[in-house]
Length: 250
Image (spheres, one colour):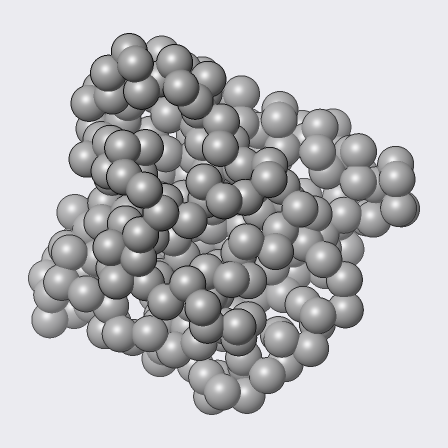
């Protein structure tokens, strides 16, 4: 796992977007198409602002996304499907966008997406790391051995508080308690992974990720086992890391 620290969230967003574009264009040049995996949330805003500006033949790109709340309408401001439609799909118009509909029956949705995912590998996974160090909605302790593509999970208390803190909901009562989430093992199948993690609220998660051995109690530590994973931080999210830790991963 490689660590890149940028001074600001905007610098981070641009650097990660350029890196992602390079990987996507390389895949298109090699095989005529690219498959990508996208995450959502407030931490991804700086990335998407730059990502949609990149010189990519989007007509050759297929996208999947990590997770969606069970039961949520795409009209709800917190819908991840709505997030991706507004910030990515309706801007660049990719060849295919395999979005999760929170109103559909979860098991039927999972079965359909699993078939499509299994057709070809995902070339580039763009994922975040949660305040509790979750990847997708795999809260600690995460199941690293679940071989399914997606599953229904119940969100933990800290995860729900993050959604409130980011402004998607006003209270715990308003939140959706379950979600369809890509599993850890499926995320790890991506050929390359870029993780965009700005903001001070992520500093503890970044510290725990880089200072712990691989453990389900800190789900993002699993990324250390990936052959091509780069984590992008800004000065705030990297603020708890020592020079020694940084030197180990740059």
